[in-house]
Image (cartoon, rainbow, N blue to C red; front, side, top):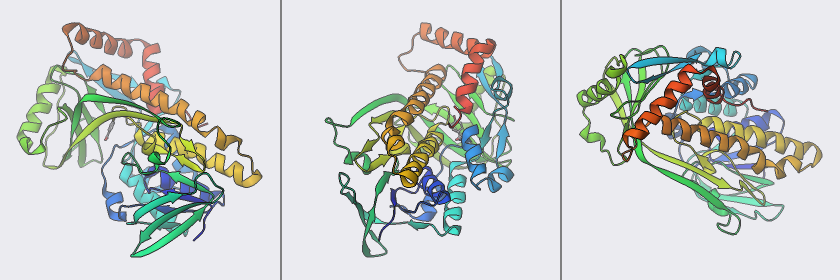
Length: 391
Ligand code: PHB
């Protein structure tokens, strides 16, 4: 088999790149270890930046999102006995975010790629990439019991945080990894209940952070900060609702309980690998960088990477100009490190650190008071929350 761009990974980065390339007439094949159903059912975050929303709409992926997603013009910060709204819309000159779950975006992307005749190979095994230093790279894999060899001009490593492709960049001599672990995690639930709030609530409390998010009028997504070693079996529904209540009631707010049909513990990590290119290999999305979920930047950064890659590959195929491809790492990293800073900042401002002193607690509250009372500080949060424009 032969294609122009071989893509390892059918997540947001890989599928969106394949979609964008198709629109400019560049061929690609996408392979993934996972089955289609697993990809379409994996629960991740649910906030799309304005730039992501615009790009999905402009490229024919807006129908279901416009119908089922929710545009939010603000978020709330709860702390010190009160709740304060950040008006994203006004502070950013009319930008907002969309609440629409990542797996819904993936369902839309897969349907669109297949309708457009795209070549997606789910459930492959033994993926092996070769020839990255040559003009002719190959991806070998087994699909439906048959060994396949895919020849391509470029290989895109979009295989998520459990990546194989990142390790094709020699560590030490070329690749450097930047890493930060956090001493806590999030306990996440999906519950059948009406929304507890019109807009998201990020809550600081002495018992730790809480996030009230939503999925639909009848399904709510909520999280509370927990120990990374937390066992979900120790948390029956009643205990979970009591914990939310204990953390939220000091701010005069609370949650509407309902049957919980999913519980998970999300680990917290910040990670960046540099460079994001080696020979004919280009990394995109979680394969190259991960953020903690505070701020919901993960999928948005993946979409931004492939927005850059699409234009760079487009320039290459239309005029053999490699300038944008050569600049890929540098171009993408600017936004990625901004996203790292923002996710880290939101995380540090809102979470309880086990070694925190009373001084640290007062300092956090001073910062929250600043971002909710100073228009300049609020604008900084709002602009980064809705995201930099895709340029
Ligand atoms: C979510 O709805 O899953 C979500 C929303 C906002 C975040 C993180 C996760 O910052």
